[in-house]
Image (cartoon, rainbow, N blue to C red):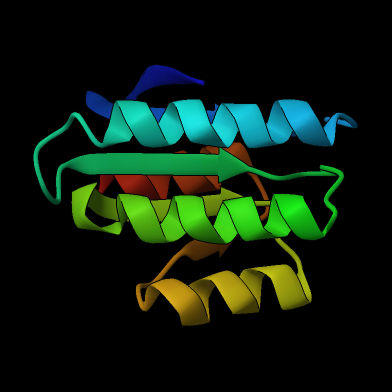
Length: 114
């Protein structure tokens, strides 16, 4: 997890890509939630990379909790590698748009325009 600057815009990148450790994924989401909750409301641009990330029921539940908890602080959110049921479930639960992209560059460009 790190802040990156793209086209002069600060974006929090939560990179869980290619992770096979469900425990590490859950821990990373908890740390990101703590960091994001220190920011002003509707101020954070976030890119979450879930490309080839391993999930189980606990990890999906944590992803849902994470997404719901950070909603008040998020200005815009983009995701890479999100598929079907997981993506649809999170979007339904949090009640906000989470834009899906195929490449990091596309996602960062979109977030920088927000």
